Structures are given as structure tokens and as C-alpha cells.
Image (cartoon, rainbow, N blue to C red):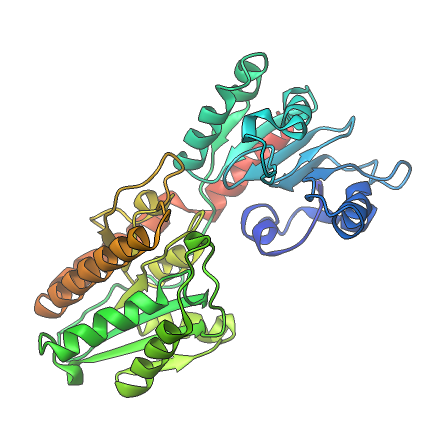
Amino acid sequence: MKIVVSSDGYPEKRNIMVDSENNYVNLKKKNIYLYINALRQKLLKKNKIFVFQPVPGLAANDADIIHLFNEVARTSDRWVSTFETEIPRVLPVAGIAKTDNPELHNLMQLAARKECIQLIAISEVTSNIQLKLLEAFPAVKDVIAAKLCVMHPPQPLLTDKGREVTGEKVTFTFIGNEFYRKGGAEVVMAFSELANEGIINVDRIKVNIIGDLSRKHNIAHRQYQDREEFYSQIEGLIKKWPFFQHSGSLPNSSVIALLKETDVGLLPTWQDTYGFSVLEMQACGCPVITTNVRALPEINPPTTGWLIDYKLNDMYEFTVDSEQAKQTIRNTVVSQLKGYIADVLHDPESINQRSAQAILRIRQQHDPQTFKKRLKEIYLS
């Protein structure tokens, strides 16, 4: 099949461009809104509009369908969109409530048109958020809701062998390019506190940390960002303890090789719409400790990994509305993380059990062939 996409970035490759038998045509440079948005953002200082509208006469007229990510389309051709939070996607405008935004009302009409044949949420949480949004649009609510489905991203198995940890040495791995948003600081704090308290034998652990320490801004913290003293403290702890092995970045092949030698993955993230790295860890037979934001409880249930639990808002995220709130969340994450680390070091068999379940989860719920089949059925519907 010939499938039009509006970009070929990581989200498209992970959720759309998954079938080698298809011909994917990237019309990013033939999208009118590529140029409209450049003018809006640079000259008018206005938000980007997440719309795909091919330049007349330059579209791939023989394409079977258009498949977008986080965008709606203004076209007479059939289209599908996969999304991670809400569709249509509209950025906040100061002083205007989201559901009062005229742009959202305009784009919602595109999602209601017959050319839109399916809206694919990447998780049940995403679907729930979308259904809540639709409550504010009764005129099109039923039409759009009928197009909604959930398809978790595909993930090939990267090993069929579970862990056989004896407890002699346990390897943990944290991966997060945005080190602070993904919970890297909390990882460092948890292990450092356990070592200082004498709860863990530092000779029995290795903690791989893959992340850019210069990526300090944490979107989840909003205006309550950490101070330079905090960042310096974290970097100092990484240097202090020899069990930390830090790399700013690694090629994906090296990351996968590392995960295959890892016993427990770490993603105590502050904010994530999904958690693709969790799938890769599980596919390597590596169970993961995560927070409970957004889709993580769906892909990291207790039988498969360990979930740090904290109260979430109606967007299934942490609410950081003060310095105190931020510190309370951090203390909770570090405390529960310390508990899970101590537990797995005391009972290595729990790693082996969850490793086997992680592999089974990926095989049953993220099978690439099943995903391709479902997509093809949507395209041909």
C-alpha cells in the first residue's frame, strides 16, 4: 500500500511506518502548514497549528491513505491519525480556556468529517482523555467518538530468555536523554541515600545512567524549576559513588546490548505521554521500576514490573503547582524507589519472575504482526 505521512520522525517510525511491504511517502515539504506555521511562529509570534494540508497538485494522488501523528488533515482524501494526548492538538493560549479556543473548534470539525476514518489513541489513558475533551463538543461528540480506537505501539521481542539473577551482583539501568524530566535525579538520590544508610552493599550493584545532564529544564515542574545547587549536588553524587556508570548518550544498538545485560530498568519519570523505553527494556527481558503517570500502569503492571504510586490529576499526570508540591512528589518517588531497590536486592527471584512476565507481555500485547494486520484493516475499511 502507498501511505502518505507528514513526517518521518521517531513517532511515525514507531507507530505508523511499521510495515516493510508498504510504500511510505513523506509529504512534509508539500504541507501548506509547514510554511504557514513558519510565518505564524516567526513573524506573528503565534502557536503552531497541527494540520496537514497538501499543496494542490503536489499531493500523492495515487496514495491509498494518509496517516498522521498528532495532526488532523484538511483534504478530500481519506486519512487516519494516531495521537498521544488529544486530537486535534492545540497549544495553550494565554487567557483563553482550552475548550473556548476558536482554533480547537475549527479543527474539531475536520475530525468529524467523513474523510477522517479513524483516530488511534496510543493508550487507554489517551482514549479517556479524548473522550473527556469531547464532552465539551456535543455536536460532534458521537461522530468523533465512534472513530476512536486504542492501539498500543508494536515492539519486537529482543530476547526470548528471561533473567536468572542469583543476587551476586545486580545491574540497574536508567535511560533518559532529558535526564531530569525522566527521573534521573531521583535515581541518583535513591541509590546514594541507600548507600549512605548502609541498607545496600555497594559492591553488589552497578547503576548505568544514560542521559544528558545538561538537559536541566523539566516541563513537569513548570515555573518551579530546580536550582543550580541541586544540579551540582546530583552531578557530585554521580562522581562520588563508583557504582554509577554515566554516559551522556549511546547509539541504540549499544543501548539494546546494555539492556540485555541489565537486571532492572529505571524510569521514575515526572512526565511521559507513553514510555517507549519501557517497551524496549521489557523486550530485552528487563523488568522496570516506573512512576504511574499516563500510560505507564498499562504497560508496566505489578506482575511485570514495579510501579511508584502517587496521586494524579485528570490528565493522569503529577500536579506541580508549588515548590512544596514538587518536593512532596520527589520525596515520595525517592522513598518508593528506595523500597523497590532494597526489595529486589533482598529477593533477586522477584527479578526473574517479572522478567519472564515482561517477555510474555511484549509477545502477547505488542506483537508487530498483529499491529500491522490491524492497521491494514483500518486502511481498507
